[in-house]
Length: 404
Ligand code: PEP
Ligand code: MN
Image (cartoon, rainbow, N blue to C red; front, side, top):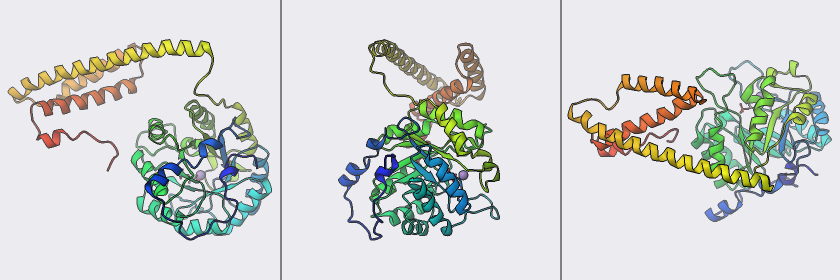
């Protein structure tokens, strides 16, 4: 087998008994599971991992048809949902266990490892009994530490790759927590999948990417390969290409894409699935990026430009530091005359002025607003700390986003 995932597909059925407990050092040293080394072997996207297949396995024929066409594209693994987490009851919930042998047989015929979602320990048992090669934990499960722990306990001693989708809500800690629970159970082959987040904001996406969250995951867990699922992120076929290219520009390790032989007849996620032939043209149109070009011209220019950027960043920090110093001076006058640290009118005026000034200098309005929200929040915190308006213990509490 030449495909990426085939290298970490088990070559025999795993035993169901618990493995010996791994000590902390072992967990750390085995956490990569060698997955990084497996990259560079993909046939259809210059060494990237490509997992593709139907949202749901609907029939023996449907999954076989998808697999045989996908097998010719050189993808890494065939996906297929067996138990579908649907928002409302009464819609198609997946075929269930009976579809596992169809998925496995389709993979076998196409010489592809097969992957499916597990949400409960019983799903893991059924997958193991049917020789499923790769498991994934869906967004609605990652969000629940009880469910993740139950899966992790069941996966103890099972040497299968497990992919972990981001939780439904934009909470990096939950995503990392799920990965850590698996690691502690001794799972060594872990891949993260970024499928976007639910937000109350109106966006063009089904699930908003919020790219900084997966990028922070990668900064904190660089050994975990990161895939993008543009199907659930975009929710429409049109968004597949721009989202996939963005992920490649950000050096993701691969993609998971929903592919159906007849997307318009799909029983779930109809609007976002594409045919295998459309997947072929999509993959052909994408341009993977590299992190570095070992060319003199590139290296010389980048070194010069980076030096300039480093200098500007230091200036930014000097300015911020000076700004906070002035803000702290203000706090004494406010305290003396019983004036609040938060000044709604002043804040409105700042927002108006800075966004106008920023946009006039080619900066994005939301970006400028984000920055000043942070600056303002910190300025108020510093003022209150400076004049002990709030008790010192509370003043030390920095606003923490998403941690519990
Ligand atoms: C899926 O991949 O079929 C799925 C249900 O995805 P998510 O967990 O990202 O919603
Ligand atoms: Mn789906």
